[in-house]
Length: 313
Image (tube, rainbow, N blue to C red; front, side):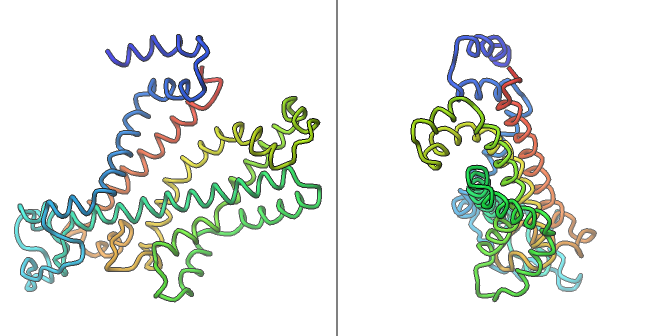
């Protein structure tokens, strides 16, 4: 019934000259898949933020070993049914170490989501600055920034990340390092999008009028161009987040990302690759969390793109 109400009221809101933000929310809410995906993403973020509270309720932490819960005679497989699930260990324990799986999973969400969101912010900021500067600068500035952007786009992300992460001292905080590496290597695509969109907006009448009024380039960018850039930038950022989650997981899986004992979903998969037969839950839990997160963010990103598209009305 609520969906029917949204469907009947949305056209009225759009036709009555509602604000751009309100139109966006109507269009997004009218998409059931995007609404469900947004709820899943919100729940995942809430779980990540509330990780200390959730583990306190369980009475565990992500780093304490429980050797008594490991069957050394079987090579370190957890004792008890379903990987050691009990009232004290809601999702069981890790093989060999006995660390609580629930605690490591929710703390791993903090690392994986935090790295992905932070890297996306860096990518958007750098790409926005470079793209606008290239479009508003003179011919030589445009040529210089465009060639730098082409080089950044051509760089193989995984190979460059592996090289940089391998040479940095281990004392440097690994989640921060992974965030910086991902964010500073892969901003080229969004810079190209911003430059192309800014060049289009420069030819519009209201931008020309602002220029004739004596406004400076950065004032024009802040007051006239940034509102027009919001839709493509937000759309592309919503696509970058699941990509960055996958990159962080891949780097941690390859052993150059987040290091133990700090939990991350990719690092958990690295340790679980030899236990998929003896303790399948150790592999399935982080893999399932990654799959659900990436899928929800991808669906939400597509919904945001549709809601921000003026032709969707």
